[in-house]
Length: 228
Length: 211
Image (cartoon, rainbow over all chains, first blue to last red):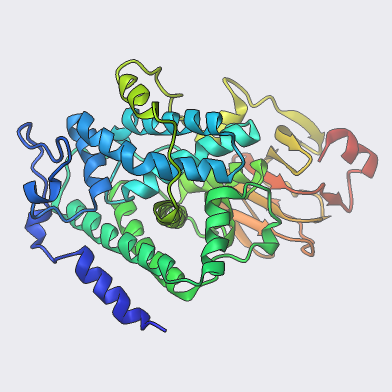
């Protein structure tokens, strides 16, 4: 059995080469293209500390970068297709929904805040909303979006980096679950859309996942305070 | 923003975030998230888990032409549905259920009024308007009930509830909530079963008014 702590520390070391905090600050000028055609984004931005999908989404948000959108498509379309097929959609419907989700990401990118969500979490929510709208034939109730701050501060950049690290560790923790435990989460979050009895909801069963979520929560709570 | 002191249990927020919660309760959770950063953070952390699960899925190739068709639509796709907006005291999720106008209050007797928002086999949601200083009749519960305060406040033996606060009760609570003096207390209430009133409103009326 793997030592979870060491595994996670190793994952953190891999995911985050501990750049100086200032390196995270993003230059928002026109000349900077985060990802153009995506062949060599790591080589072009050696200090880029955020996960590639999050960087692509930021390039879409800030530069309306079509190359970065194509990268997002290549990364997420096959996963979203799998998610939609799991909930029983036909291939044709799944294709339509996947296209709709990614076009929505393109159109709503101005609402994306990397200090509050990784690209995968943000796109997951768009996808889950659409999936519920279609399968239940109703508009899913959602809260209004919080207004974005116009200036990105160093604290925002640090929060984005911290969230990115937490998300990487969350993924690692998920990978390290027993297959049947992982299946519980995949079924709840990706496919199963039946109304469950609330009191039968088991909640999140696994300690590692719970502690990861708790850390992400502290980060998010702090972030949200700054938006009011 | 005034601090919210009665929150939604994390397992219910998780059920909302993962899509398992019936529509009526989802309206209550989404409304509370509008008013409570702490619970919004819980929901967003659940999205992070959903995102991680999405990342870990085995890929299924979409239709071969989908990429080109999607890229071709970047400039011409119809605008997405507008972001839901709050209206007056009603956060976006309630405003969306009300539609363009309303609420159209309907009397339940004893000065209490309601507007039904959601009425489905798996549960219902309604707005209730109770005059300041009035008590809601003694009632017990049958199933799960969530009540969120939008205006004014009410108290019962479990505590005091003001804007944004949510009271979550299950089967066995018998209580007599009392609206505080002042403006009418307006609540959003969702249940998965009909309320059982012990006094004041006979069962027949209960059926007629669907409360």
